[in-house]
Length: 429
Image (tube, rainbow, N blue to C red; front, side):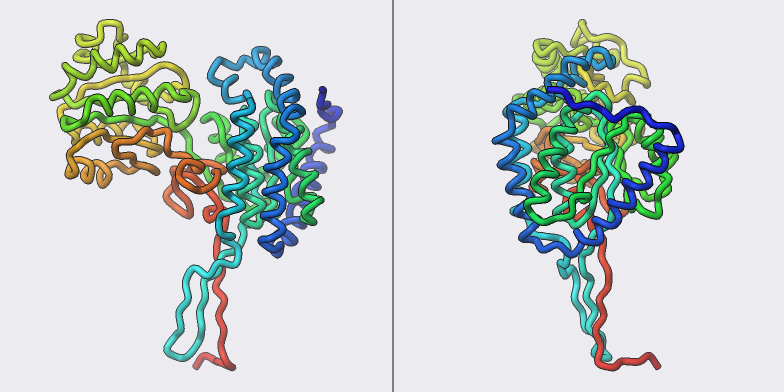
C-alpha cells in the first residue's frame, strides 16, 4: 500500500493552504465545543473498534515507514518509537475506550458560590479551541492526541514527522471516517499533508486561529516551536530523569526499578538517564545493578567511586549528567546523602520525572518536597509518568511548565474555564 504525499507547492501557496487549514479548524472547533458527550464517545468507541478491524491496513502502512526509516537516519530507539504492532494498536484502542469512559470536562461545574448579594457564580469548563500538535516518530500518539482533543471539545491540527507519513495518513483516514459517522465536523481532526518544514512555521504564525501549540519530540523541535509560536506553547524540553537509591532502600526492589526505568523503553522521555546511589549502600548495590544493566546492554558512565565498583563503567563528565540519552546509556553517581542527591537533580535535571527508592517514610517525604519535578515517584519506575498509566486514558504530552498544566496532559488540561454569573436584575452600586 502507498500513501502519496501531495505534490510540492510554492512558498506562497503553502502559506495560503496552511491558513485555510487553520481557518477550517477554527470553524470546526466552534461546532465541536457544542457537541454532545454522547456523539464524542460514539466516535471514540467506533474508532477503537476500527483500529482493531483495520489493523492489517494500518500495519501495512507502518511497515512502509519502518522500511524507509534508516534512510532518515533513525537509530534503533527511534525506529522502535516509529513501529506499530498488534500490541500497540490494542493499547491505542484501549486508550480510546478509557477516554470515552472519562467524564467530559466541557460544561463541568468546577466551583459554585453564591455572593452575599444573591449573585450565583459558576466556574465552568470550556475547550481551548484549536490545538496544533507537532510530533515526531510515534504514530500511536496520533490517536491519543485526536482522542483527547475531540473529547475535550478542541479541534486539532496534527503534524507528524515525515518518517511516519504513511502511518499517520492511514490513522487519520480511519479517524476521519468515524467522525462523519458520529455526525461530528470533519475538520475537527486534520493532518498536515505537507512534509515541508516551512508548513510548521506558517501554522505557528496563525495565533488568530490556533489557540495552543504542543510540540512533542526532540529539544531542537521544541525550541523552534517556543521561539516561533504566536500562541501559548505546552512543552517540556528534556527528560533527564533520575532514580535515587536511598540508604534505606530495599536493594532487590531498587534493582527492579532501575532496570525497568532505564531499559523498558529507553527511547522515551520518562526513561531514567541517571542513577544516584547513597554511599552507604553503594558497595553492595552498584556491582549488583551494574551486572543487571550490563546484561541488558547498558553502557554506564560514572564517578570515581562508581568506576571502582563497576570497572566497565566509563568516566562521567558534567555533560554526561545533563544528557538525555534516549538510548541504552546511563550516568551514575555515588552521593553522600539525600540532600546531595536532590542538589544533583536540581543542577542537572529537567524537572520531568525523578524517583526515590526507600523504606524510610521521612526520606520519601523529604524527597517529594525537595525535588521540583512534574512527577516524583516513590518506590516506582519513572516510566509511570504517563497519561495512560496515571488514569488519564491517554496524554497529549508532558509539561514541565509551572502554569496551567503540569505533568501528563489529558482531558482536563486541554480545557480552560469561564465564569457564568446569574442574577435577578442585579446592578452594581
